[in-house]
Image 1 (cartoon, helix red, strand yellow):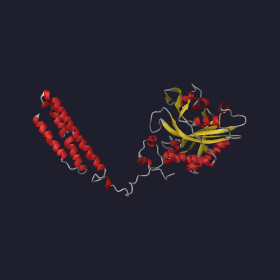
Image 2 (cartoon, helix red, strand yellow):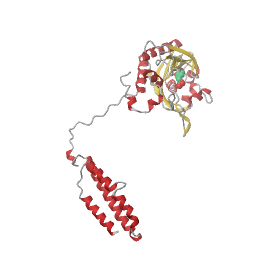
Image 3 (spheres, helix red, strand yellow):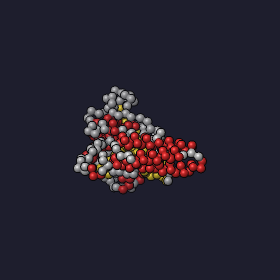
Image 4 (cartoon, protein in one colour):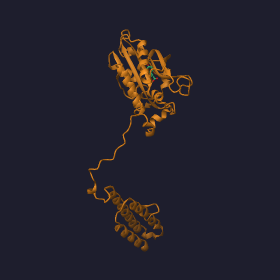
Length: 343
Ligand code: DAH
């Protein structure tokens, strides 16, 4: 043990005599004293050769030595951070700051803003609602009572504390909230994030974005619905894109229709995006069901309305020709950087 103590004394002197130098010297010090094969580890390894009754004393000395070596390292490291000489006065405060790279808008944000702008020109204003919704606004008020089979297509995530709360499955819940709080005429566009209990793949995700539209006034007709959506498609995709309506079913509209546009990827000749049909569905729509108007105290004999809902990712996919939905939420700047200026 005597010999070991002498060695420790030697090392202490060595540490005390060090003149702190740059980062390389510091790293060499760290490896020599504190590294996995360094001096401190090595001395702890010698513990087994120390006689039992001296182990305690030796252990204490060794711990003190370890703390000394570590403290020296920390001081040295800190002094490097305050300028080459370790002197705070040497910092030149007049130097310009490092430039920070500018971020870009996310493609979903760009497309969402464009949708809002197009409908804004027709007099629609933005309305928003909570992402954690209650059953009434997301389902029941929209004619989707408990056990309605259409709920199956919108399985979602429920909140443990209260079985009545869920993550909204569509922005149609904002329709419900607006009809609840405003009197007609109502003309709103509701962008927002929605959730579904789906396995994540190139074609589905557990969250995505929608934009809902709602127009209620006297004498609103299906012709108004069609003309509004034609205008939107032309503004978004250009004049050459073809549009078709297919009869469909939504509990909150009657009659209901889905709207397709000619596939922008293949120009209508058929590809994997349009599943070889030449058409891609972009939204659901219809005339607001009279039951909904009644639910919110709006007289269905006086007022009529139309509504529609579209997936923002779908519009984005068609606009930018990006097929894999997962890319939008992976946060890879190499992907995200490509879109600003492209709209
Ligand atoms: N909420 C529907 C969905 O998520 C989309 C939709 C269809 C909204 C028709 C509407 C509508 O307002 O009228 O699938």
